[in-house]
Image 1 (cartoon, rainbow, N blue to C red):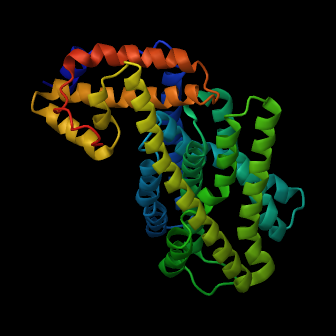
Image 2 (tube, rainbow, N blue to C red):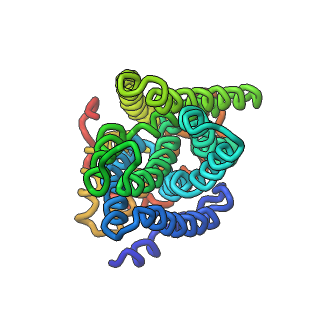
Image 3 (spheres, one colour):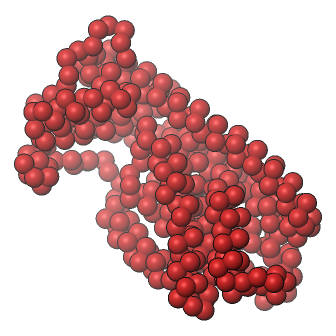
Length: 386
């Protein structure tokens, strides 16, 4: 069976409670993506040659697969819709740049010196432009944000998009050379790539992580004042981290930059460890919630091991494949719906604010029930085996 035939044979994936504007979001992301691609080519062309433009684009792209893979891995337990993650990246690469750049130009024309613009003006403008997506998420898409890890993922993807576009401009400018540096061309562009693309690819995600953490904390606050207060504190912390990085060069020169680099590298390490721990806890939450769902009779207890650990989930899909692509697709869809229902159920049972949580949980259970005739799970595991 073809993919289209498989999709047609299975129950329709209709979500009666889905949020409006999904198609509009997809269209907007595509339009902004095309505009962003044109903008990247334009920034690269400022290098003055085809070779310089090509180098700027290639160097900007090199760190992206590894950086994006890291955030995709963090998001694997409770994955958010691809369209939303794409929107976050495109916002950073296109919308945030379109907001921050005029703000910085305006500060310069109002008389702000170059040193102050680098040390403070740019952090204020850029973190505001990136943070607006976080604010819109809290206002418009609060239902898909569960906590700090989601906040880190959202803010990180926005920051990666911004950094990628910014790097194109930096590499193009480096190719042309600077008055105070006796180098230009490939040599200077490569040196800039080593500093920005290899030694500090997660600088912007680190800066934006503060407002991401604030969003993760704010989503569970019932008080509007508390939510906005947390976002304001997160924004100020993001500006402070960015200003520490930029200002270290202006104020302390090479030594100041080295000290700031060490401090921020330690913070980044701590942030990475925290994100991994939060991801591991998500697996524990998933197992606990699915176990409770089984005790309530919503799912069969023998299904739980095939819905939690990634290795078991993959084993279940492989087992279903021998019965045909229809059953393999049904198992994969069932696993995805069960994951979403489990996290919603846990949020409801632990008293965390989730818009329409019970109704959405029951709607997911209905969709899972309609898939049951197509399920082909492996034989039940012995008691106690996970």
